[in-house]
Image 1: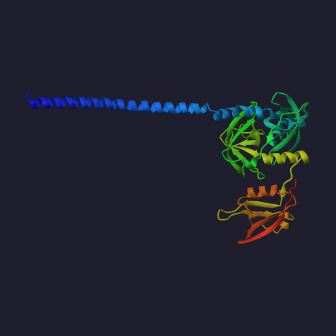
Image 2: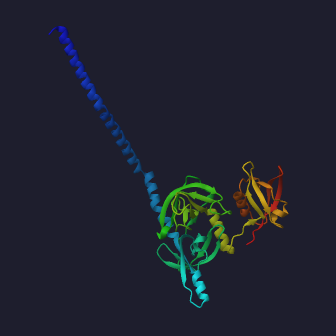
Image 3: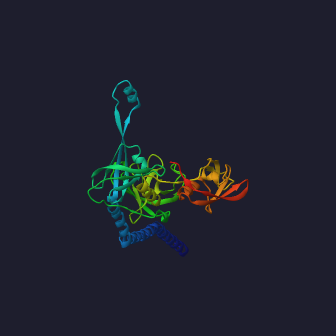
Length: 367
């Protein structure tokens, strides 16, 4: 073998060794990188675990366990019964047969707002009932009487007589609620006593939902199911921010509504004082304006009504209420119903393309 041949053989050997080392490196490198990434991930997990055991998250966990004890004793189960005679039995009764009566039962929730047994719930839970039973958190049952109701806001006030004071919930200020705030719904869905669900406020000031022209709603993604109706929606301090009233669809779909606490409180106080709720009235039929127009269209005016006395005519476009722009009928109705009886309010209108102003005196809505 010549020198050149030997050198060539050595070079081939070195190249083979280098290639082998490179191949091993290529195979081993991902494993090495993976170990490094895994080590970093483990370190991150350990850091998160350390943070999760810190005081702040412990306090959050404590909050979730404290709220049921704080507000739970003031939440009640409301069962209403209505005796119904079947149509076929009514016909049979005319022929001398004794009709068969069946009992229709509705179940909901309520919240104690006064220690002497005053309870707020939804009107639809107790509507047309012959008997109402309230079950306290400790399991005691009491016959309840209906103090008064306001179907327009779906609220009712009950009273029970107990030998001792009852735990109460505290009203919060729903005007301060912001989208994204944490809230908890407490009630008796499907008869499951004092169930706590959690979510956030998804929207505030929802108008024109649930066929209710007289109020706005809080929207939440906290699970609200049949039986929750009438229970409280509370904030992190356990204060009532709303009274849960409805869900969208037949079961939980992430969209529920609650009557704002300021509305529920005002309605309940009015019912306790007079047995009913008075709302402002001007006598206009309203509808949405066209897409090219801003404002609320007056479709009709009731003769001899406050609107008629103010000179408002069908076809007028109401664009402001007391200086505040209004773009939809629900907003204008809400303003009117919240205005004290007898108060004079300036309305901005557009008639025949010309802006004008009228003053209307809010009257008492016929009952």
